[in-house]
Image 1 (tube, one colour):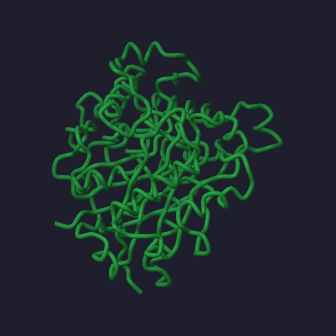
Image 2 (image 1 turned 120 degrees about the vertical axis):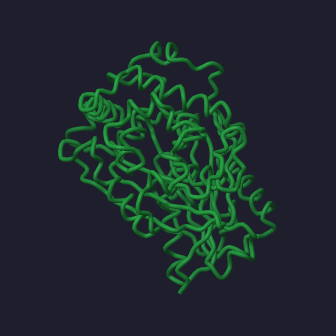
Amino acid sequence: MSKKVAIVGYKQTKHTFDSPVSRERMVYELVKSLYGDMGITKDDIDTFIMASNDFTDGRTISEVYIVPRIGAYMKDESKVESDGLNAALYAYMRILSGLYDTALVIGFSMSGSEFRVPMIHSYVMDPAYERPRGLINFYSTAALQAKAYMGKYGFKEEDLAKLTVKNLKNANNNPYAARKEQKPTMDSVLGSRPLYSPLRQAHISAYADGAAAVVLASEKSAKRFTDKPLWITGVGHSMDTYYIGDRDLVRMDSLRAAGEKAYRMAGIKSPKREIDLAELHTNFASEEPVFSEALGLFKEGSGRDVVKSGDSRVDGKLPVNPSGGPLGANPINAAGLIRLVDACAQLNGEAGKNQVKGARTALAHGQDGPGAQQNVVFIVRREK
């Protein structure tokens, strides 16, 4: 059984707020283009993993419409009803089992045009108490987390605005991002519509139509597909309790545990020194300092100093979301997989204006649930 798995191909759509084509056509064109770029066919793929959801697709057993579009008809395929990085983890484990040499992972949704995201999120909440009252939801949980972090470490609304501007500017330089604000400023962020204090409209990720696809291969097969394989050297997964009041939203034990597992597997002793960039699945701008500190990328409580110094910018000491992250585009079910695709592009020097110089080791993160209840972390490295 091979203990090494590589990423040998990856691609994402140009995300939009109103796709001109159906999800089936979007997925078909993406996968066909990826196969063409790699010079392969569907017969080169042993197992297919889709990240989708019957609620977001608006129909039951929704994957049956996608299976033929990705070349999985009458082949081994499965669906993960969660964020796309969970699907990548599933595919990774399938290859480690020794039963498969290659896997295609695809995540997609039409969360920009076909449904209102908070309505879908409401079905995650407790049906007897939380859902009918609407007091605890993804937005209010993020606001509680932001308030807690601000109160504990003196992080100000102005710091949050500056952090948001950083990511919006990165999104402007990302050709795949849906959200393009020509001149994002602190005034424009602080003047945007208030939602749950301290969160405003500008702090919310850009729910969009889009998809991403990744091809994984075992060590013995990787060089057959590319002379530049990117090796998955560490993975970690952890889930916290569902109940918001029973967990520390600032400490983020679930994310902390997932990161520690990935670091231990990858042999990373000091994340802040050994990781060159991080692509984090931040549904809200306020999550960036909380997540990056839980992952050990920055000192706990240093959010204000990081913003002031610019350490998390593209040209900083440890760039966080150089792509703009989900603030630029957040297709549900694909956001975490997009983080992996963007990390791979960085390692291969394909990130254009957002390129991090000398990037060799990257962290990709995916999450699901209110307050990032469940987390997945990937460490990916480029060979010297």
